[in-house]
Length: 399
Image (cartoon, rainbow, N blue to C red):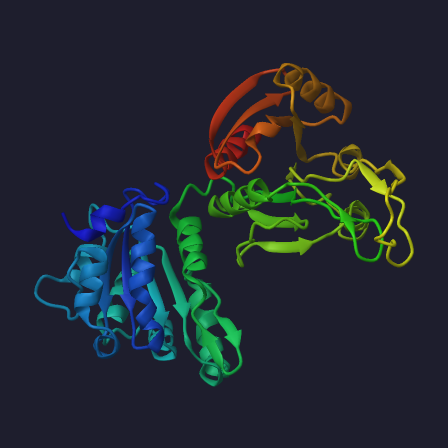
């Protein structure tokens, strides 16, 4: 068994049975294509490498053969490799991914020139109507060239997708591997939410006690990040309002950060939520807010009593602000016997479409158990990873 098979699907089955041609051009970022190929395989994809002559000067074809288990195409032969993979045939590949892509290759593709292996594959894929995703990587002065930018726009008008480079100092760098993979999944995955605009409000709040101390909670933010990520994968326009939790947010998710309940209320007022089709509130928002002391409370006291007041309820304001949206709330209790009853009461009181209920036993664990309750009191019970449950919740709210 080739080493590539040992890692296939080890992260997810999202790209299972998907066949991707990975075009590699002569950018120094070609050194990253082994990691990229391996990550695509970890999500289940079959990856077929194609290299320009200049790319082989930067990374040896053996490296990509090791990474993918497939011998790279380095020249077009009598086997008409470009047609065999990307032509109008019975079973073409699912996508041509060109990463990294040089300024030279972008401009050739824009003008229909195919004098390298990668550009010949591109011409064939475009002519066959296959998805093409380009990841530019080059010196910043090259990327800023007006003619190159014109050629990029020309490609986009012809249906070619781009993953924008990371601009840092004097470079237009290839973005992170996870971001590229996310765009691949978004382009050739389920795409059942591509006409939806989704807001996820997640993470924990941090309410100040004095100028130094805060009251917060144990929410990790994993559920919010998983929901935003999975909605992005499935084609939605996603926005995340995110609190003070420790789970990192992927760079491709549009994110606005908040600290306190008051910050969330300001976002509701200033940004608004009326345009969203689906609003999911999985944030651990404070129920009580301490009266803030000026300065720092003296630390030598034997006893400290905090005065706290009920926090404004964000969830109760959403229906009037977004009358047409599907609203999803979360309910957490430590008593499983009361959980379903309290969840339906929450749903009814706030005119929500779904409530996702879970117990405190799932905190900080990789596997959680939830009950998804709708207006008709139908209950879906599921357990699994945060990513699995995120897909389950999106499935439930979609219908």
